[in-house]
Figure 1 (cartoon, helix red, strand yellow):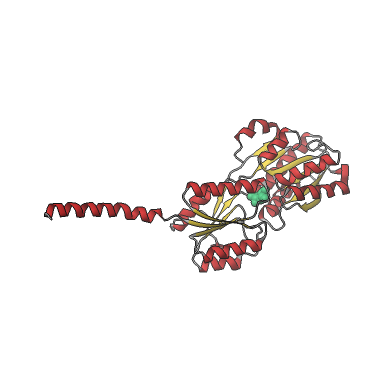
Figure 2 (cartoon, rainbow, N blue to C red):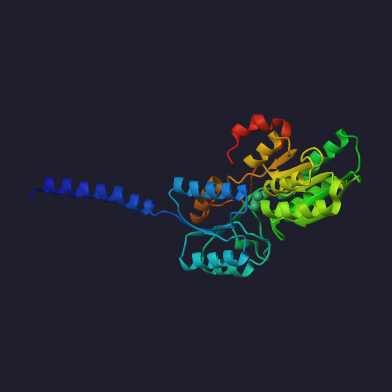
Amino acid sequence: MHPTRRTILAGAALALASAVIPQAMAAKPLVIGFSQVGAESEWRTANTASIKDSAKKEGVTLKFADAQQRQENQVKAIRSFIAQRVDLIAFSPVVESGWDTVLREAKAAKIPVILTDRSVNVSDPSLYATLIGSDFVEEGRKAGRWLLDYAKKNGDKPLNIVELQGTVGSAPAIDRKAGFEEIIKANPKLKVVRTQTGDFTRTKGKEVMEAFLKSMGKSINVLYAHNDDMAIGAIQAIEEAGLKPGKDIIIVSIDGVKGAFQAMIAGKLNVTVECSPLLGPQLMEAARKVVEGKPVDKRIVVNESVFPADVAAKELPNRKY
Ligand code: GZL
C-alpha cells in the first residue's frame, strides 16, 4: 500500500479512536442507589417524582427502594446497594438515629453517601458527604410567627392549640416542634394543650384529631399540623364533628402541597409553610460532584416561602407539587 495512503488511514483510525474512547468513558452512567422513606404523603410522592425525573434527565441509573416508613427496610436497601457496588448511595432517613453501623459499612466499601430531605444523628459526620433539604426549625418558626400575628390581630385572646406531630424521631417532627415552641412562647396566652404523632399521613391525622375533639371538643382554637396531609385528614374529622375548619378551629400547616392550596381556597385551612420536595436536580448535581471528587457544601439548604389563604387562588396555578 502506498505510504501516503497508509499514513492517511492510520491518522483516520487514530482520530476515530480518540473520538470514541472518551465518549465510551463518558457514556458510563452514574449508578445511584436511593432509599426513599415511603409514599406517606403528597410531599413524598412529589419528592420521589423529582428524584426519578432528574435521574432520567441526567442519564443516571437510579436503583430506587421504597422503605414503607420502616428504618429496617432502609438499612436493608443500603446494604443491597453496597453489595451491588453502586457509585453513590442517597437516602432520606425516616428517623434521625440508628445509622452509624450501616453508614460505616458504606464508608468501608468506599461508597459515598448523600442525605436528602432529613438529617441523621451520627458520631462521625464524615459518614455522609452532604445533606440537601429544608431548615425544619425555621419552618416551625414561620408557623409560630404566623400564629403570633394572627393572635395579635384577633383580640389577643387565649388560644388552646392541639399539635399533630410528624413521624416520631424524625428530623422534621423534632425540629418543627422546636421551632414553633421557640416562637409562641413570646405569648403566654398561646398554649399547646395536646400533642401527638399523626405519622405524616391523612389517615392517622384524622384519627388523632378525632381523639382530640372527643376529649376537648369546642375548647380547641388552633391546630398546628407538621404536614398538610395530616391537616387535610384533621379537616375531615373537624367537619364530621360539626365544626368549621379554618373558622371554629384555625389550622396552620407545613409543606405547601396542592391539596393545602385547595383547602385554603375552600376556606378550610388558614396558612401553609412551604417545604419544597423538588430536590432531584440538586441531588444529581451534588452526586456527580461527589463521585468526581469535587468539593460540595456539607449542608445545601432549600429556600422556601409562607402561603396564607388569601394568596392561595392566585398561587395555585404556579405550584409544581
Ligand atoms: C419534610 C419531609 C416530610 C414532609 C411530609 O422534608 O421529610 O415528610 O413534611 C413527609 O409530608 O411525609
